[in-house]
Length: 495
Image (cartoon, rainbow, N blue to C red; front, top):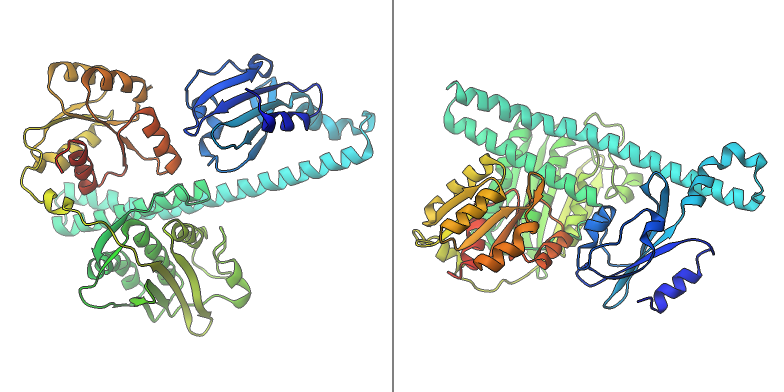
C-alpha cells in the first residue's frame, strides 16, 4: 500500500519512530492500512468505516490539502503526530509516534541543566513552546470572549421568549402580539446560533449556496421587521429604498443573514439619526447598501474590521466582534463580495454586499406544493427521540395528505415498518445512544424505501459523508416547512 508520497514522508522522519499508515478514498472511508496500530495504543480500523469514526479529532478538517495535527494524545501513554497526505484517488493519514519527544518537551525546562540536548535544539524547542502557549492563550481568550458574547446576546431574546410565553399562558397579553415577539426573538436566536457555528469552523466553505427566487419587497419587509424594534428603541429612523416589484435570484438565507449582521451593527453603533437599506442593480450585480449615521470607523482600524474579535475601540456597546468576519465568509461562500465603501467619524459608514446575477432552472415545484393534499395515499415514518420535534413535523406535514407514523427509537420504528406499508423514512441521526446509520442498511435492504436524514450540522463535508453512508438526502435543522415537504415530494417521486 505504501506509495512514493508516503515513503518520501517516512524518510523525512527520525529513525526509531513507529508509524501507522491509513489509506482513505475520496469519500474519506478507510480502504487499507499498514504498520502496527498497537504500538501507538490503537486497534486496527474497520474496512470501509469513515475515518471520523476511527479518529474523531478529524471531524473538523476539510481534507482539501495536506495538514498536520501535532502531539495528539491517543491515551495517557501514547502521543503521535497525525499527518494528512492528499493524493488523486487515495489519500493517506500517517500517524507518527511522538511519545518520547512529547514527554521530553514537557520536562525539558525543569531538567534542562542536566540534559545533554544541545543549546540550539533547546532554543528551538523553547521557541516552539512559546508559540504554542501564545496560541493556547489566544484560543482561551477567544473562547472566553465568545462565551461572554453568547451569554449576553442569547440571554436577551431568551428572556423575551420566556417572558412572553408566560404572559400568553396566563392570557395576560394579546395572542397575535405575543406570538410576533416570540417569533422575532426566535429568528434572532437562530441567526446567532448559525453565526456561532460558522465561527466554530472558522470558514464558510461548508455552506452550499441555494439560489431561490424572492421579491425585493418581501426580503426588505422581513429585514425591517427584525431590525425596526431595536432601531425604534434608540429613536433611529429606518429608511428602505428599492425598485417596486423587482424579483431576484439569490441565496436568500445567507444574504438575509449578512444583511441582518450589517443592520445590527448599523443600529448598534448609531446613537441618533438613521439607518438605511438600499438595493440597486449595477453591471449585472445585485448591490445591497447598508448606510448609517453612526460613529464611523477610524481610518487606522478599517483594514482589520473583517478580522475576528475586531471592534470599534472606545465605544460603549458590547459585542464579540465576529459579525463582520462571519458575514464576509458567508459572502465568499455564495460568490459575493462584502466591502466597506466609506466610513468617517463625521458621516457614518456605508457597507455594500455585491452579488453576481444568477439564474435558476424553471421548476413547477412551488405550484405543486400549493396543491391540496399533494401526498394523498402516501405514508412516511418520522423517527426522533424528541417528542416536540415529532409533534412539530406532524403539524408541518398535516396539510400534505400524508399518513404520518412516528417513533422515538429504532425498536419502535422497526415494528412500524413491519406492520405498515410505509413509503419513506425521515430520521434524526442521534437516537439516544444509537446512531441511525447502524440501522440504515437493514431498513433500505428489507423495506426498499428512501431514508432522509435530519441534521443540525451545516457542513458540506458532513452532508457528503452522510450521503456516502446511504442516506438519500439531508434535511437541515432548524427544519423549514416548505423545504421539508419539497424534499419529501421529490423522494416520493411525486414532483
